[in-house]
Length: 257
Image 1 (cartoon, rainbow, N blue to C red):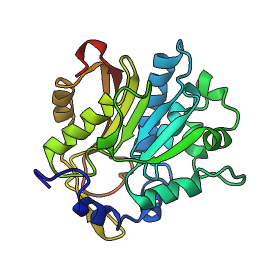
Image 2 (spheres, rainbow, N blue to C red):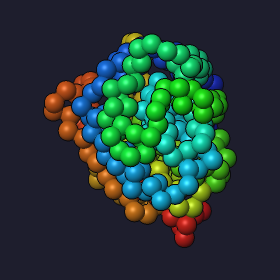
Image 3 (tube, one colour):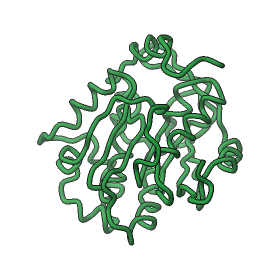
Image 4 (tube, helix red, strand yellow):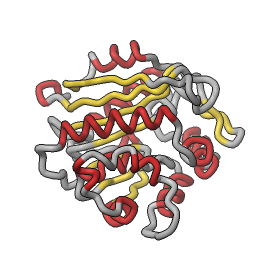
């Protein structure tokens, strides 16, 4: 994929084969220990970063896919949450799974990990609240309007859409460029991944590490960053990766470009 333009027919052909339901079943139909680590770390960060702030008018989760827990993490801190996606299958999955329904909710175990923190505890019905306050937009990470959101997340997107290091960094920069100065953010990556399969279809990945993420952050307009490298020894998600890496921080006002 080196040197190609973003959003080419090659992209469209690849992502038209993405099995959203299969991806959800493999990754989020049950709670993995590494996701628990991430949720506890991220919710504690947002509780510190946002406690003294008025809830933002809009937050954004970039490339939501079939993962609702980044949006749930931001739920107490935003009046509205925009979930963006490129793949049509993921758009359809989000529309179906964000409907306001009753009954068993597969995301309850994820929510329970944050529910003891004060702001999360105040959200009485997170499933119905998210159904009421979300908006789904079909949008590439490279098409995000600049300086439009004051809180944002991007989980397993920039590193799981390409095998080109330059395109990976461009995606991260595009995400940060979409946030306002001082905005808290969450980013997550799969460290050591050479790619992954969804229902037998291969998808690319950039091979990142804790060290390479630290080096990248040094080139980006960010401040107050903290990193978590998860422990994959308890119950790994799949073969072919080393760990998950979560980055928390703020967009630096004096380094915007």
